[in-house]
Length: 351
Length: 287
Image 1 (cartoon, chains in turn green, blue):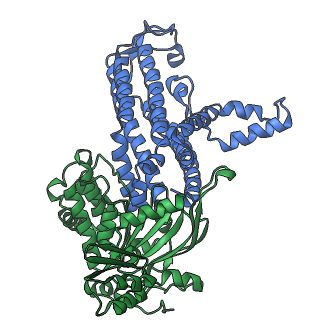
Image 2 (tube, rainbow over the protein chains, first blue to last red):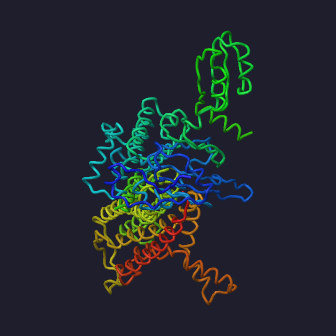
Image 3 (cartoon, rainbow over the protein chains, first blue to last red):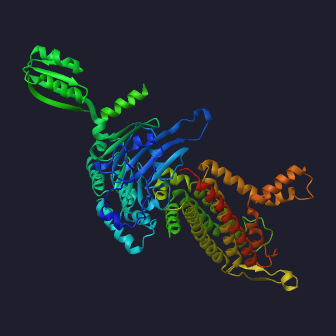
């Protein structure tokens, strides 16, 4: 097991932010460590931005109907990582985010954000949140809304004005800052939501369905923004149904269903179908028989022979066997889309 | 700064609520219409235009009380649930905002909204009273002169009692606002509306609960204790009801300013207590 206590070299911006050194998160058990320590960005071990241990949330109500919204989940998100959190409706995504923000309280288990217990008021200076389909005070103009949120960070007048202007420009609303939100389209409201989430130049952003219901231009702008945040070393916790977006921008993904994490890992790990297709030409009939013990399936198509192999070891065995007996055309590892994997997992669980 | 920002936003939001605007406009309209009220509508046996003025004052104070009652209830019940429904509370509490700052900000905003509404109605009401008093006369009573009725005298244009009356209305519904704010932390708006209404009715009937729980009461001791508890817990809204005293010169309060001071302290005490309870409950409230 790799240690969690080795920090990556921080970029200059993080040194200048003046944040106190974070307490490293100690793994609670071996099992926990195995689940959570499976990924470290670029092979470098970094501190955890989010650590969730055996988290359970059961909502109140009639005793017999008490189904856990989140059921004993554990995971970590490394600093600087763009982490996708996906699942069907009612899977427990928003509940998890709300617990991490301190808006809900866990029934059991622990949740830590930037090394502090979830909901810590000082940590909130370093994080931000964009809820799904956010609504703001409609009577206010775009600029007034951003100024209002700036005040919540106790910014002075000059700083507030400058920050508002900067953010409106950043999200492409500089020309519309004087209009009331009542006159804004859904895409513009989402941009205001993004702007309010960037006020404090956060180290960690929670984005809940940031691209839902947006037109293609706004959609593209926001996915590009998320990617750029990742490049700046920000940690992004992205909950989304837009699996294409998650596949494009995320380093690592967790799939949650009925309150349980059913799959977690890097996209490469998750989407590798675990199968390689080796294609030969000019293969003799004896070769087909010779490779069969290593193959899941062998199919002949005219001159071409396709060998479907499950493990890497068997790939080598097939290649060794075929050496000098056929012409190698291609060796292609098969890859699923995130959508295929998601549908497959959710259906399996439903069965 | 945070509390003030939340309060200002709450005021801006509330003042744009159509339903509250309707209450305000209707109340102002009716106060202005009351200018045309005359003794012909009055059941007073006393002749003279001073009875017209009394009618306008009585009607105006009553109408303002109803409007302020509706405004505080309708605004108060949605204070917190609306923030949850709109999800604005999530973005606010995800920022370094303490939960008590949010609650105090919302309450302050609601009280300011009430103050603005009552002030607007109050200014119109007092202007209407002044206008009605122009050139009006009242009979000089034998008590004042020591002689049999000798004639008429000019009615004073500005009646300070009406200012105290407006202040009392504001204080009364400040307390009701804090009651519904407390309920809005854990009740739905509809339930809260009826709970707020219930508390107000019981509070207005404070003299009755006091009598029922007194030593002289013939009730069963358990019931007496029950009424005593109700009397202590529920704010005494009757304390603020001084309309009759203000309208009838023959019933004097020694010092209206002193009485207003005491009632202000009473309102402040109840408001702070209820807000403290709201803060304590909201600390552990899941949103």
